[in-house]
Amino acid sequence: MISGHRRYRGAVSLPDLLRADPDATIADLVTHGCSVTADAELEDVARLMTDYDLTVVPVLDDQEHPIGVVTVDDILELLLPPPGRRFGIFGGS
Image 1 (cartoon, rainbow, N blue to C red):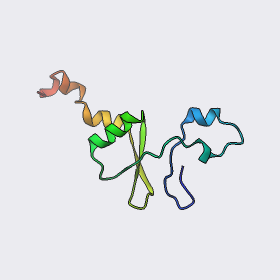
Image 2: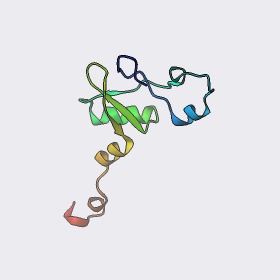
Image 3: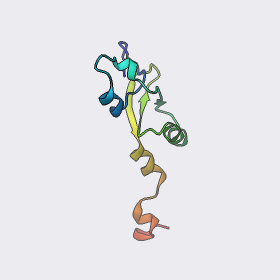
């Protein structure tokens, strides 16, 4: 959810959105306001996603404007070795 000033204020899960009362506002459904900045450390992003069971976390600039997202796939790709390297294929160690 982004406020009228285009600042990130939180997230709404799809299941919560689908199960919500038709009269509920999006603000009523916000479950967390987790986000990171572009200079966040990989370990900190991974820990945040693990602690809150997130599959995506928004990346915000200094004015809290959304500039992108980090997905769980992005984190796994950076933390786990490529399959070929893991099995010793392609000259990896």
